[in-house]
Length: 245
Image 1: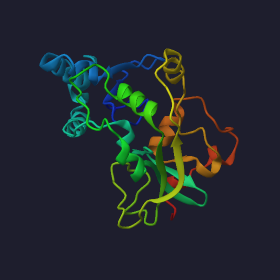
Image 2 (image 1 turned 60 degrees about the vertical axis):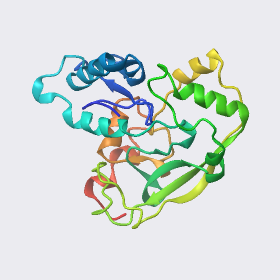
Image 3 (image 1 turned 135 degrees about the vertical axis):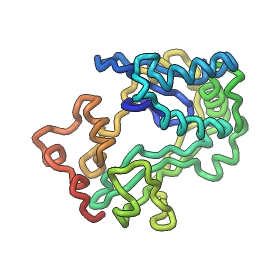
Image 4 (image 1 turned 180 degrees about the horizontal axis):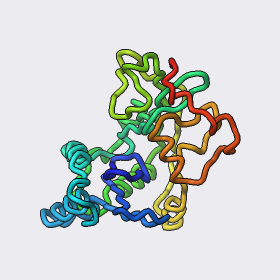
């Protein structure tokens, strides 16, 4: 979850937030790690709310991120769970061959049932997700379902408005592949450094799976382009004219 006008480093349930505090310089983004704030109790929560809404005190009152804060707080009411029990979605739409789709990765039923450390307490420590994940993967492998939801109606399943949830009754998710995490030890410091240095961008794909819509175009401008600017993929975007799925 991110304040207005900013980018998510990761679309997850860690409650990590990023704000650029009106600083457009490359690499100038500042991090709001909610776990660190919440571990300090009520004073930490108050400071988190202030920094989130005001962009670390740099935003004008008319630009304060009240709507985004409301969305964040609605998520905070949910009990944090192990990352192996979470479902992960693409932020926007993508090409799926000749179709338009959204993609998600959901825990496979049999794997989800084996997770021992299920509910997590965000006030117990500054970092709660990684230790639980490390412990689980030391004990057994896990599996996720890679699923695709095809767009069948652009009015009810718009590409440009990511606030509209695509109804599964109209187009259910279909499992197209498996993502398997082998049993392993990921606790090493070198592993953590390698993870932090990893670049995650939806644009590192083939043209058959390229991102679509305004949110995805904005994310492409925040990182070096993957496609050749002279290619057809860069010259045109069919979602601009809202062609049928």
